[in-house]
Image 1 (cartoon, helix red, strand yellow):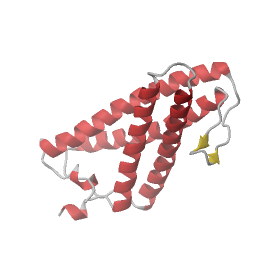
Image 2 (cartoon, one colour):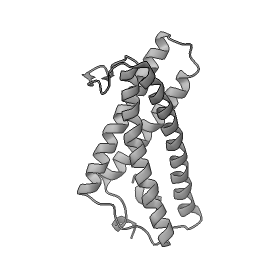
Image 3 (tube, one colour):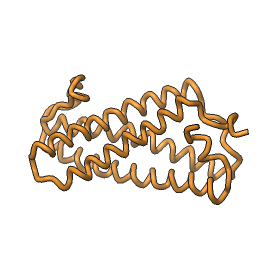
Image 4 (cartoon, one colour):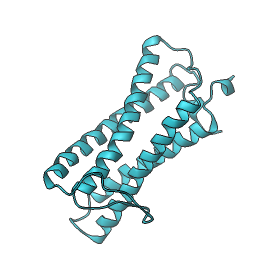
Length: 177
């Protein structure tokens, strides 16, 4: 029964790769906060953070494209308000996972730092160096980051509620085999 409501293997892989990239981006930036100003270790970690962010952006674009090509399986039975809330939450997550890396990319550019993804692919500057814009973008980047954490917490709590309280297949359909 679960097989007909499971997400396909590609959707599950993209979901969990995105989770890993988002987790890496947050873990790296939190580690960076402990380091002094402009140390070589901080610069290295900031680059890793940017690489994780660009990876999140690419995975999210791929995920949206894949969802257009291969729609999600029918939802498990649940009240209409939960289906609507789930769609809204997922929509906000997709929006935040697109906006956050783009704002971070512009922040890096506005601060005068180019992004070279994994030291291989130089990304174009989206904006010119601009200190005032960088400050505005830094605030937006932090705000969106906080929003992502809240949205992810709700997402995880809802999945756990469905699994342990409702005892339905909501969580199992996204788990790897």
